[in-house]
Image (cartoon, rainbow, N blue to C red; front, side):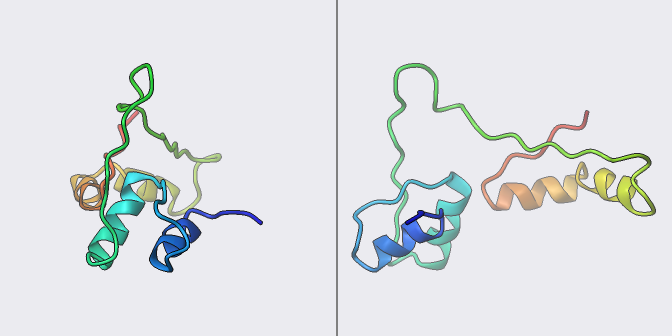
Length: 96
């Protein structure tokens, strides 16, 4: 049996688990949608500075990116998108 990041909070809601460890932005979503069911509890960092770790996602174009590739990539670096990311607990991506 595999555990998907969406199944862990479902197990908590169903009373099958006491806790689910998920990425911050996913926890934020569940707390916003189901405030009477979930709460976020910050995990203590293990030895080292793991509190400031994160996952990076990179985007690029293959060839010239086709008709819309460059426009899409440029849009991802706009202040409008940075605000959307922030509203969902994510940091904006850095423009290369």
